[in-house]
Length: 294
Image 1 (spheres, one colour):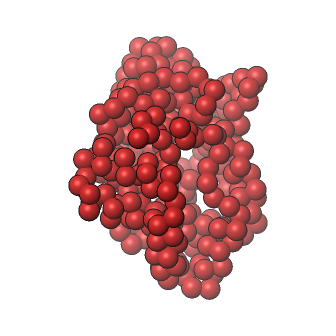
Image 2 (image 1 turned 180 degrees about the vertical axis):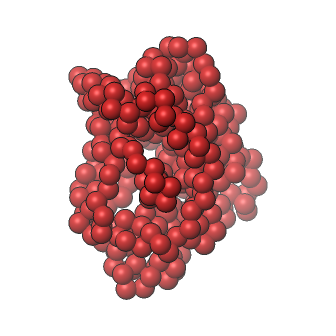
């Protein structure tokens, strides 16, 4: 069984290559390099290929040929998202266009002066969300709650090549649960707390819910915290469209009873499933998500 271990793939070398390509070739030309990189993963990454094939064939009901094509397109799209993130952080934000869908939900959330919780997923390119906010004078501190300590070196490198330092703060999940105090402090300042709700790692507490017709495990933390604190919850996704265009979605979570973490999770999975079906190549979970390895 290959479950997510709390660390994501990606190396500092990979990002250095992206930066070199972007600076010397431009964003669109850099995409060309990805056709070869995606081909390598398509041919040689046996494990992730197996899980992608399961996702497309079993969960989205694609036929054999469409599954093969989609597998390649998934790697290609992931590479484009990484290049876009690197380019935007490096000062090329104006080469991209942005579309806002439900941004009033975020404005209303902040007007309540309670802070708010954003729940996203490993879909699209949420890490560029703050660059959307710059277009609409959306002045608010975002705190990203994460377990991925591996991002630290990559984050430091991207900051070194960025023309503007990121305003996103990281709150790392700790075994002694002290991160709860950091979350409460941020909410008291009317700041936003962001979770990704679609990955749990072995040994952590989880909840189960259906996604794409089969039960899967999800991290309990985001839904336990959000259902107990009584603050507004919004599902937020930043999705790549054609060319250099991005679309931000912000949807108010369905109302559930206080402390009903399971109800909030089911609301989330319904919302996430609608996004996955609309953007199937942009859900980047290359492991045995449904614990159904064949």
